[in-house]
Amino acid sequence: MLLIITGLSGAGKSTALHALEDNGFFCTDNLPVTMLADWAENMLQNEYNAAVGIDIRSSENPVLLYQALSSIRQGLDWKIMFIDAKDEVLQRRFSTVRRRHPHMPSIPLEQAVASERQALSSLQQQADIVLDSSNITPYQLSDLVESYWRKQKSVLADKQPLVWSLISFSYQRGLPAGADMVMDMRFLPNPHYEPKLAPLTGKDAEVQAFLSALDEVQQAETYIQNWLSFVAPKMIQERKRYFTLGFGCSGGRHRSVYMTEMIAKWLIDENMGVPIVRHREIGDIH
Image 1 (cartoon, rainbow, N blue to C red):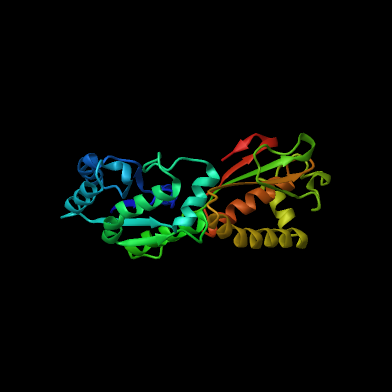
Image 2: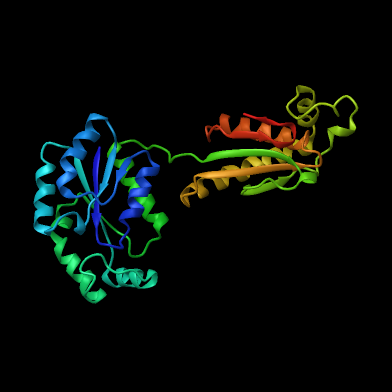
């Protein structure tokens, strides 16, 4: 699929491109319209889903831009997405970030916005879909773009899963760097005080059998699973792609290792992703 992202400056074209890039598109921004035909041919030869950002700067003349896009769409499965916003919203956005408007930057901002809107009016009429970002957040705009993509593919595909990183650690050696959240497992019974289990780790079957037989361990696993089930789609909705979760205990060898292993297995079983697992204190990563 070939998708053109265009629209008013400040409306959210870059946000739309980033959303598509997160969904596997090959994305190019600010491509001159004279290069569009060769770019499209290369994308088709490589069988990419591709999106290109085109705006008023892509051609010296808005009429030529409109004509070029009309011509190149013939015989190809091009779709045009136009990102729009109200004039007062665009003016406020440019004033907030203190950037000059790219279209006729030497004139007052209000006039530049109005001039660009007039120049792109024919292109907006040509668009397959127009998204208004005036009253939505960038995250919500990203969701609209993704919804359009899924509709075009005629499948109800899930969003890209989180990339999970799970780490076990000992509180005696400090918190793991870069963790988004840590959970304290020191309230669970400690296998360290069982002579046969002390030299083992939470990866060993004997330790896992000991802990899994305890009601409080089972309850803790259930609470963690329920929390992750609830929060994972919320994090994806907020455009978070990576999440590092730490499990800590006194020595970082038994309880934290056990819970890290169990949650990693559960994530895989629930098709929520294949996590990167690191046991800091026993020098293991998989």
